[in-house]
Amino acid sequence: MVIKGLSGDTLTVLEQNYAGRQWVEERTYSASAYLRIIQTLCYPPEIVQGKRIDGTESSPAPSGTPGNNEPKTISETQQQEKTVGIPADLCREWKNEDGVVEFYIKNGSIYAPISKELYPSAFTGEEISDNWIRKNVEYETIDVEKMISYSLQDIRKNCYPSISYEVKGTDENLDMGDTVKIDDEEFPGGLVLSARVSEQHISFTNDGTNQTVFDNYKALKNKLSKDLINRYEELAEQAKPFELRPITDKGTTFKNSTGLSVLTAELWKSNKQYDATFQFRNFDTLLASGLTYTVDGSTVPIDKPFLVSIDAFIGNGLVATRQITFTNVMDGPKGDKGDKGALDETQVKEITDKIDTNTDQAMTHEQLNLLLQTQNLMTAEMKSKATAEQVDALFASYNKYVSDESVNKANTEAALIANAERIEAFRKDFDDKMVQLDFVSNYMRVTDLGFEISANDGSSSLLIQKDRISMFSAGKEVMYISQGLIHIDNGVFTKTLQIGNFRESQLDGDSTTNVTIYVS
Image (spheres, rainbow, N blue to C red):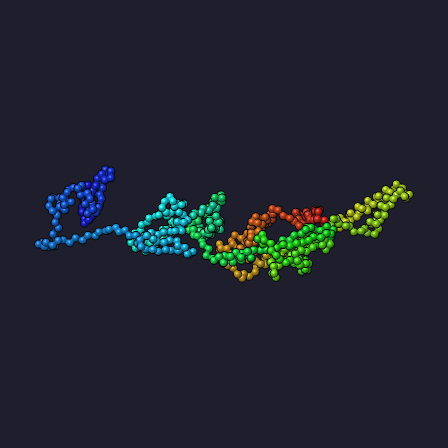
């Protein structure tokens, strides 16, 4: 070791072979402490005795003017490290929103008792003397209040575990910087977070790899009182629509105007049946009041369906309405009687009776053959007449249908043109924002992606886009119109279906037979 210099209490030395090192290092120490401990190792030894290296005693250097023996004044600046902690006698506590102590100061340390109970260092505390997890921190300040503030910030960040969320997939409606809500139902007690979109990775060839990254997670806490929450749940339950369920014991189709069918109504909501009173009506005509209504097949018209509307009342309030249709069909069409001069049914019966009793009459074989030919001719004539009348009725019905469709189509196209020509009364540019109108059981939503009309429960919806009109049932697209074509997965036509010049419909009066005719 070689002493390089001494300034006040600071000793600068050159050391070699310190802690096994084989090179010279320059180090500084407190002179009073260093020399007192290892003074026997110092060389030259005169320095320990306060002498100069030449053996003379050190003396203050003269200062001032010559002849003035006053000592020279030397100014020195010394820097000392001071350790300050939270006073041991200081006690303080901080409570959370529930009034429970979350942090407190005791014996010069800050404690987080809630964190200790939730996340102990040991499960039982028997492995060590306590369940606390300790962390020491240092700050460059001697201000106790700043020290406490910095310590609280650190302990708040570290006393509860952090939860990260990785989202696979993306939403085309999200942009950078958007804030979303995340509902973690699997988190104990439930957890609702807000997060901000920080990154979006979008693939134009494989949208299955699209990914959205969120940051700035914040836990959202429900600040509503329990009474308000209960009231909210009650209002939400009241907003749900009632379901009116009609039930029949004999179905809704009568044959040959015979039979009875008992119609019963039930009112349900959220899998719970409600007590209600019901009114059964046919348009504006009241049919019955009560829980049931008996439909008589003899009162149901053959040529048109019989519509029964059911209104459900709780107290004096109408809560639901449902319609059900009854029909009356015949086993087969009856032809009209033939014109005068031709054989009618009575004459045929007389001829048949004569044939059956020919053994009692003196009729020849040729006469019998003539009677049989006449009977066959009459039967064919009656069938031909009935078929021709049905075809005429079918053509008349179709011609009316075509005429009505042409008029309706022209009116619709004219209304569309007139709507576009109306004077503009209101317009607002919503850019990429959304406009939504909410009602009790449904809503309308408009964005630059399209116009949507939907039930709140998602049971059915309609989406109109610039090149596609879609209908959804239970979230699945079941029909859409695009490029002049209508696409339907599955469907039921209750009236007619025409493809090209061929039209298929149900035979009037016979629900078991369909007919296909060519229409030019």
